[in-house]
Structure formats: C-alpha cells, structure tokens
Image 1 (cartoon, rainbow, N blue to C red):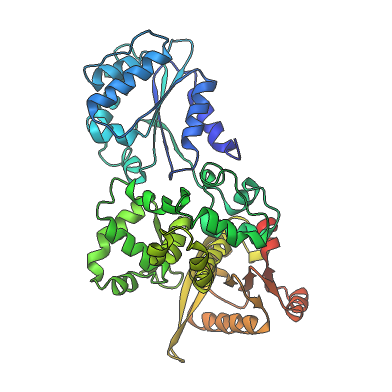
Image 2: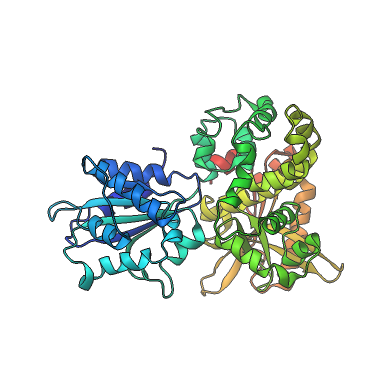
Length: 484
C-alpha cells in the first residue's frame, strides 16, 4: 500500500468500532484510485466479507451474491435468496456480538441500478425498529459513479443521516505521484503527471510498470503506452465516459471536453466552439461536474464569472492530442508521426494549463505563509480588466487571505509558465498588474507579493533581484516539488 495511511486509518477505525449495533460507511472516488484494493485488504485483515458487483440483472446479482457469501461461510452450495430483503437480513446477522464484521459491497451503483429499492432495504435494516436481530456488521458501500454515490446521503435519500463513515479516495497529489512512479527527474515527473495525473492504476496495471528511463525516453514512453492502440491507456479516456451511468449522450460530453481542452473554458466559449446556445449546455456541464470530470473555478475578481477545467489529465490529453488524430492513431505505426506533429499543441494545450493548475495546487497546499505574505484562505485564477487600455489580463494565481480586521485581502498574485525562462520582463508585467489591482480592488495594497513560477528556469539577473526583494518569490520545479 502506498500513501493511503489516512484512508486505511479511517477504514480500520470504522470496521473495529466495538458497538453492538450495525453501522454504515460509504466509500467513493474516481475510478482506478485503489478503492477495491483498500476494501479487499480491510476485509481480509478483519475476516470480513467482500463482494464485487457486476452490471447484471437483479436475479443474476442475487445469484452471484449468494455464491460469494456461501464461499465466505465455507458452505458447500450457494445461498439462494428470493430477493434483496432476504439477502440484506442475512448479511446483517453475519457478525457476533463480541466481534464486528466488515461487509463491503463494491460497485454498489450496479446493484442499485438493477434493484432501486436496495438503499431503502438497507435503511430499514439499519433502523433500530427494523433490525430484527441485527449484529455489529460494518457495512461498506463503495462506488466510482460519483454523482450516484454523492446522492446516497443527501436530501430525502433513504440513507440520509445513516452513515458513520463518508470516505472519498482521491487521486495522488503531484508530489506523491512522483514518489509513486519512483522518479528523481523533476521535469520528467511533471511531464508524466501532465499526461496520466496521479491515478495509481496507470503506474502498474495499465503500463506493466513501464516508467520512462529519462527525459529522452518520455516521448517514446508516450508513443508505446498512451498512443499505442494495443495498450489499455489508448482507449481509457473513452471508457471513463462510457462507464459513467449519467453520461448518456456521449458525443455531446466529448464535445464539451474537447472545447475545454482547446482552451474554451467559459460557458460562452464552449457554446461557441460547439455552435450551440449557452443555455443548451447547462445540463451537460452540470452532469460533468457531478461525475467529477470537470470543475468550475470561480474568478478571483468577478463573483459571477467562472471557468471550467478538466480534472483528469488523461482526459485533457486525449481531447487535445488524440481525438483529433484518432483515425491515424488507430492504424499501428502512425503514433510517432502524430506525436511529432502534436508537440506545439502538447506544450500549449496540455503542459501550460496543467502547470498553472499545479502552481495553484502548490500555493494552496504546500507554500508556507511567509512565502505568500500571510495565511491563505483561497487560491484562484482571475481576469483583471484594464479599462484604460480596453483589454484584460489573466492572472494564473491569486492568493486570498484575511487581514487583522477579518476582511478578505489579496495576499499574492502570480504568473506560471511551464516552458519559459522567466526574466525581468515577466516581473515588470506582474508589477504593472499589481498597480492596476491596487487601483481597482480595495482588497489589494503594496504588500501584495509577486510569485513567478516556471517549469524551466529564471534568468541570472532575475535571481539576483529576488535575493534583495522581499516582495518577490521565484518558484521552480525544485521548489514546487520539494520546497515551500
């Protein structure tokens, strides 16, 4: 097991709770993050029952469940259940009063899709008036359909208020991902993260442990693992959409993701790219948000303005690089040519946005308060209007915090470039934007710090300047991955 100390601690606390009553836990997270591994491991450690559901009819699911349960109980023949009410009652009697027993139902959305009444049956079994001899079973419901799992415990849902554990298994942070891939080269770690992100399964199962041997091997690694029609990563982005039950019109959702990957990250920009009305996309964008494939980032300077960002790097890579070249890529032997002509797009549409996201991630979770000029509360991007020149300026990083009076103020602003060597020209631009911000926004003053972040390097004269200026911070990959 790598890193999942927090998740493991929460699971073991839940399954070992000494109470005599049954209890419910809900585990969710995007696919390929190791949820199954965690549930199977905790059931093995506590001698519990683990069942992985498949997409099947109710009768077939009950048959599979009865077979798995008989195997767990060392019974010679499968259990036969007339319905899920009987199966749930049986499960709730698996434990003894002196030892809690975990029961994990993995891919629970498959079961509930075929048997919509199942959450109500579980609710009845958990209710004190309906336990009918229930024992200290620690029932864990797990699924990757984020919208479904999120709705299990909200509003008027039967299981609302019943869960003692709500655990979300996240993707690995970019720093953890570098360690998980066993890399020492920071630039290489960034490049790989921009393609496959922090999903653990892409490191082992999907590549058979194939790790780039160095920067020179990054391109060949992409060709042989991601652009190769014989490897699972090749179609993974398509499968991610196909596996989500709420995504029915996949052509529209792929179109929305392509628009965002092309840099059209506002609702109007997406609508223009797809030649549709902005109002026609409300449902599609909401669904993509609900399933965790896109996130809407608020603008730091406009409360009603926001931009959309693809959360899974492999999805962004697919829609920027692979989908436009799909015909050639499906024919073996053309991947190298596609990769060669996609370099400019890769730098601008993949590396650039990904580095900006990592810059905000670092600023939000890793940067020290003294680096930012105070304790941050939010880290956003923003578009700063400039009426005098009749234009606007994008700020990749806007750090917000609270002053001694409790009022929100701007602590720092920053520019992030994935490939550029930054010099005094970039500093001068940031200084001008700070002056403009001070004139336009009461939350800003001369104490606003300036952050320059790069995936490449800084000019020697800028490094000398930074040594004598307390309002300037230079963040390269070394500091991004290992410093604060």
